[in-house]
Image 1 (tube, rainbow over the protein chains, first blue to last red):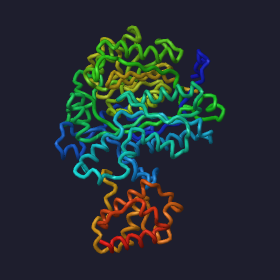
Image 2: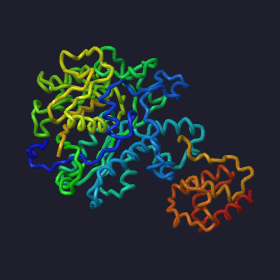
Image 3: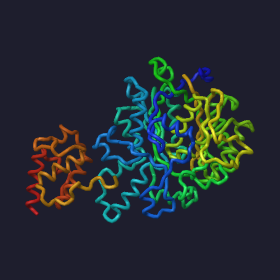
Image 4: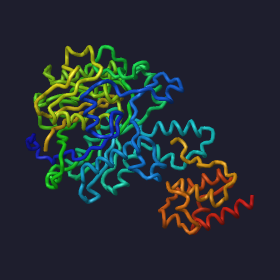
Length: 416
Length: 93
């Protein structure tokens, strides 16, 4: 679809490249196919968690992703798994975009990470706690939260702003939104943006399990992530990275780039309510959704479907349903959550979902929520279950809500 | 990937000092020992940085049981020179 001109005459930004490393595939096509099939959660027991008798012994792991084919051994020696996932996805995204040579100071990197290098520092503490000066020389550059963003900038020589946004589970969405603002503001012509995390360790999972945020369905991982379902008992930890090349629309059109769609609207705000729980009335979250829709120059009725944060925690899904209902004044379009399939990629989730939502909107098809048998939020929202739902060609709203009351919403419009 | 600095052959028994040095450098630079000869200049040929030199030093300290400062390695013109300096050092033990 050809979107209307920007109401405020602002510079517009489009997605011209996508690269992913996810539990359901290392290409966007594989991810979309898995999400549409909604056959269950891509979770399996994790050997180290089983061996250590962790409370939660399963997760959605990225299968073998062959970093050696993309990264040098020298580079791999200095980075950890989260950064390797992000770098591989970034290389795919840049290749996918077929970016022409650009003035390097006009290209930036904006990533989101909720947990970053903490699991690597955890391993360092366990391995070298008794002899700290025996730790690897590269421990700090390996574990710092901005390691992946810096590595991407170094790899390509991008000299523009290089930022890592950290808003827990909303990090990836915030990164894409902030990248949009840099392009709108005229600061950058292109941004490698998105999110990543990899934190499948006993300590990390125990931390989330301790606050009863994780599903304990150890005996049935495939049915563990159940967004909006009556039997949901928490989210399923995933890992992965989703990286997008966001480009000034005029420049992308001029060079004849393949365009996935436009990042048309963004808003972010805070519940200022509780360090982990969402506000049950969802007032700030609803305002955030409304803000993103208005930022895109649209009205709520223009949105074709909502990609919910939909983590499958009791509190998130209930509060989000209330917030969606509020934002759309009782007229919400169909709602989905891909986390029933992918699990929760934490910092990677928002960017992955933005990419998937954009493709699904372009195909006029809303993927069903996996493992959704009986919806407890059906009084407020229409959650798609069972089979994909056909909708009109329309923009999609994608939500992310992080611990700390961090709200971030994007509006994505398919087409050029 | 929790301890990438652990030498691939932590026990130096049976290996010459030159072999240990070449293997250690190759490990840090992600290459093979046969790429590292006496005439290799780590800075000119491989763009080695100070953190990598420190990583080489730390691994060699463990493998050889001698104290090595990054300056020791930076003083060396090439790998052969570094091996000579380290040979002297281990002889002093």
